[in-house]
Image (cartoon, rainbow, N blue to C red; front, side):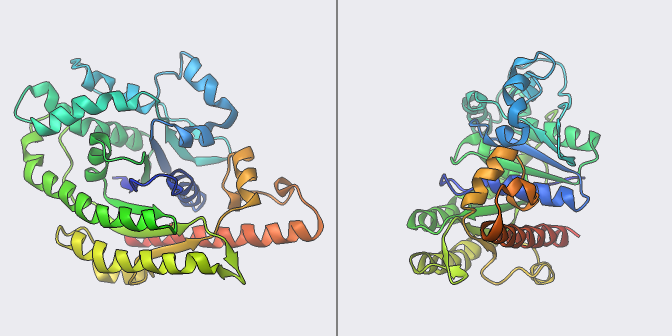
Length: 342
């Protein structure tokens, strides 16, 4: 069964979408079939993935309803028909990488879902809602023989995010080196264990639903610290303190809190995957000029060809060095995930 990994932080602007896309691409590049899920109504992941096909995808009647919101519509409208899989498009440049596109109106389902998880003893049809998203992902992943499902969520504490989180197998917290990310991690140290505690207490109430909430507890893979400038090949001084501070908060506050809900892999798994004690999976500097090329071509910066760098001389040499460094980092990240689940 495919492993579901959520990329979540309720602080915005921490590169959740880019990270989901890049790690998914690298896993697919290494030979694993990967399904991306765009759970953010902004649909940035879908836009990156489909590139110039984006508008046509939602306008063409053959594909317009092949998205996350329409995929669970029958459950949320209380229709008797069962959910069916999404015709997930594959990436033009990476045949192992698929996506369930997002929908800008997905948040319309949040009030119904909130009611369903807070009043689970009511109508039978309402009991189908919390497990509907998981069912859609699973039947789609099964059809495409997917090994990993990577889920990009919007920065919020909605009922939809809660359900995606508690139905996942593992999670990664992307961060930026700023004080607000530190505050966000402290907040998540209370919120995420509360979500898991709710699942442990209430999931049995949904066991007779058509789409029950899956068993298991989401486990912490680690945090990523991204989008900072460097000097002499290390984070510049203004960022270094905050980077260290985030690592300390994760190790000393966040991890002890989630440990109480058994939200960690066994220590030997982390050791085998070479994940450090501060759980920082990587420090990823700002993409700078490579970032624009990534947007233009719809592929990760580490997948850009020499020609796509669109530079010459010393500038091109520096871009190649940066590209290859990013490739090494994301290769290591993908192998950490593979090792954890092996």
